[in-house]
Image 1 (cartoon, rainbow, N blue to C red):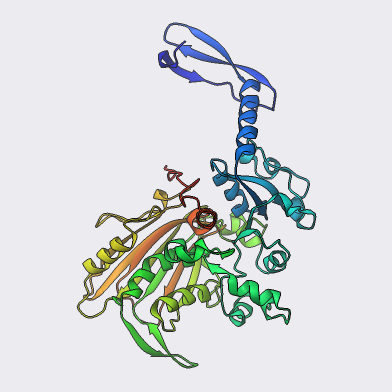
Image 2: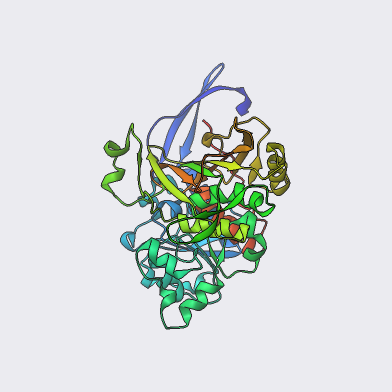
Length: 446
């Protein structure tokens, strides 16, 4: 019977175990028809998954699979035609299945999770490393040299290991007298994909950017490179440096930013119906943002960054206030961003006047941005939004040693473009596949 004749479909509620069969009723316009769902569907799906998995060309190891970024990697790879997961580690969840830790992934045919020390990398071609900061250094040191690695921690993002120690509160292993760590540190490529694509292509180890730095650098780097924003000398308490004097960045992020670990500050009763600041003057993404903007300006840039927590799950928005160089207009900023990103798959400059919203990138690898004129002459506002990885929705106020000038707004999903999605985008490039492979999920709305 053609499904086109069905007026409505009503399934019996309940959980179907593997091999279980239940009867559901379908209401036809003229009669009631019974058909079976459950066992047959499950079996055929599993057969299809096993068949597809065996055909996949690249064997993926996922280290730290039981966290939010690990789960997001699994979700994204479910429809990837070339990448199949053959190894998963999670020390605290060793021996468990992914479906028992994340029930929404119960349909996936995945290996059981094992401890890192028990991991066999002989059946792996590439690795996503989703381990905590500090842990990754030792693990990557011991991985076979043939592996392509995308590291989602902060361990290889900063070139200056002294800055790493200052901001992360522990020495970096690259300071060790053993040569292996400095070599690994120097070969790491910072993987802000749209900015560093050519470097990523030839990399063995990519340091995946943080969520805030992604949402802030994407709109600012192209503008800084062509000198359309004001740079001026500023005197701080330590020394004289060149600083951006016209930017104040306001970033908003989700409740998933701090990971899946149980923390009192992240309990529902602690964060619901409220907002508060954290990491005041010492947020760990500050040196990463400064490093990227300084590279673009070829001069030292300092930023002041204060994040705020809000009860949301996904998404990040950054609002950036900038002062334009003499003779530069808001239209010039818009056209420069259009020129920089018009051929990009995942970074989209919206039509003039359209305000980016985190709802419109939720669950996707997209970054939406736009530029608006400030009411104060010579200034602009940039807004960007992304889907990022974190556990508390955060607002970040980022001030670059000056009064508020024109502002850009950027929005991303913190678990996707701000973490796992960009990681997959990078690995696609590293292995020579189209970078949008497995990433063409459309945003979830409503």
